[in-house]
Image (tube, rainbow, N blue to C red; front, side):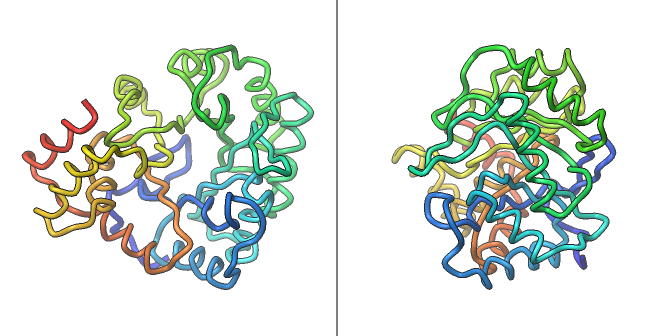
Length: 288
């Protein structure tokens, strides 16, 4: 890995130091996150470029494909550099219609962890997020049983660190009462700001917050406001949105995905965009 100056610097997940600018592997699978990519060689090239750029944080799941992205990661990067850390998630599977039915029974979670281990080719997973809720958002309710299953797997040495995904603030509190977590992965972006208080709380605790779909969710009006700032800065709206997230709080880690090497490089450059105090004030109004 030849870059040490990625935008945002680094963050520590437990004892894992990762670049705040990571990479999300979901888009490497086929349409609808099902099946193989149209361009397998291109997918492998993207993953190798991730490492070449100095990114040390890859987010994936064995449900992507299913199994496709993890197998690509292994083909492209195994044996993994010591500095590279792969984050995966469990709690949902795939059906033939491309849906994401929950899979949180103890035996389902144990099987999912073992499949992640097998497909990634590792003896222990760096970080496993328990995904709750559904494809349409968070759902209130207890998480003790599935989370305790992952805690057991952690004690058995198969998982190093734990996180939660698609969760309510109350579920974060419940998880933390059971065992330490090092990250929360939720829907958040310029236009969707429901987790503002949670982000600040986690920052005080030294817990990372990882927004997924960080660039989506803009209405035409909000997109216009973002585009106005971007045009003034001579940048793309995507660059501004990524840079804003890095400015929002030091505990925010980014995992933008792409299946294009050129787009990957654009994301890295864009996240380093300098935003003035006036830019930030204007952007902050979008989600308020």
